[in-house]
Length: 87
Image 1: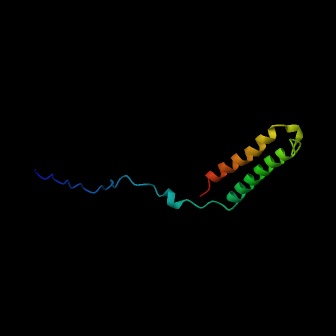
Image 2: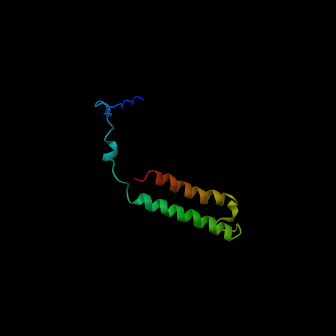
Image 3: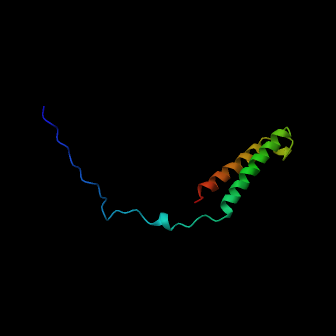
């Protein structure tokens, strides 16, 4: 039985006119307030929800009713948005 031939492929070299932009390496790091604010918003959101449930919906603001849930989860979602901009 004849032996199969081995193909020799050339090593791929990308074209020189198409190069990634250097913006990724020149981006500045995030300011220190960004992760601090994000962590604070997470803690505030969780604390708001825990107080709301443990007080049987009497605190933090009784007249808001279920909008207290929106405040707690809104704080946590806003912290996720801040953390998505963290470098």
